Amino acid sequence: MAPLDYSIRAADNGESATARVIEGLETFGYTPSADEIDHRPPPDADDLDATVSAMFQIMADTLQDTCLEPDLEDVLWQLTNVFHRKAAKEQRKLDDNEARQRSSQELQDGSEIRSVELENLIAHGQAIIDHRDIWENCRDIAAENFRALSGSAWRPHSGSMANRKTMTAAVIDSRDFINAKRYKETNTLTPPGTLIALSGGINFNNTDAIYKALDGVLSRNPDMILIHGGYHTGADRIAATWARNRGVTQIPFAPDFKKYPKNQAGFARNDEIIKLRPRGILVFDGSGIQHQIAREALKAGILLNDYRTDKGGR
Image 1 (cartoon, rainbow, N blue to C red):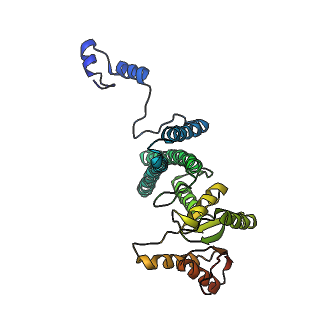
Image 2 (spheres, rainbow, N blue to C red):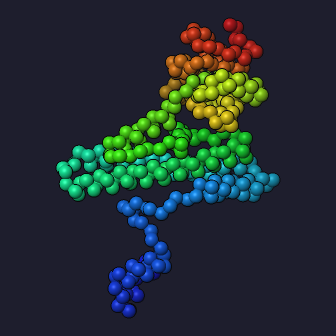
Image 3 (spheres, rainbow, N blue to C red):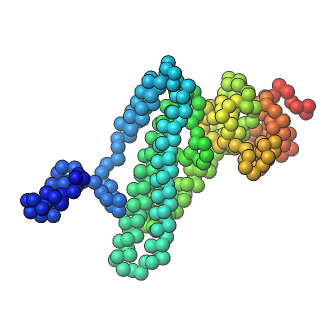
């Protein structure tokens, strides 16, 4: 018998429906339905932090020094991705809520029923924002643990990694709610700041050189946003880890191999970076891709910090 199935017992003792509901509440507690707003308090932030961190540490302690240690980084990446996907799911709910609010706005006729319907949608939207922000916070805690245990910055394989935990939306009515949502999205995904690009080869592994150069730029541009090539090895990986360690927003510009042939995608990506007119570009040793972005930066009048030992015949 299901936990809340009282049909058999009711037939035996003649309990009323109210009595059965009260007994269910006493036994299992109150759980809101899918159409209701859950007014229970959110998890304590410190408890969540400790729990997520403990999950990572336990997994690392269990797999290290065993035959499964080579799989540890992938397992920790997937664990972080669980929270990322939960946040993305809440975001899709929020998008659906926005569409329903727009529809409700068009149907407003001054009646109490329509007004209450819209108020409920607004309240649901705010609740969804709260849930999304909690999962994003879990994702960020997990990403920090991933970095500490693997030495690499965590990034999703595709899409953006937005962080809204420091932002709030003051919702007055439905239109204000939608505008606040859009404002948050825009300012999270395109944050204001000084664009700085970095380009280096996939085999370039001089961590000290990149850290020293980027630390110097950050000291002069505390609002910097770092653009790099998004590759999982070499200069891009070092730059991504530096940005994570320093709390700097990063924009990986991975080559679009679906749109361009393999031998052209990197150069096309360079063109897109130049179009953004970054304040400066740091170039380290690599290949023709690095030589090309250095030449294009000079043509465009963009400040070039050139750390190449081989200038490519320039």
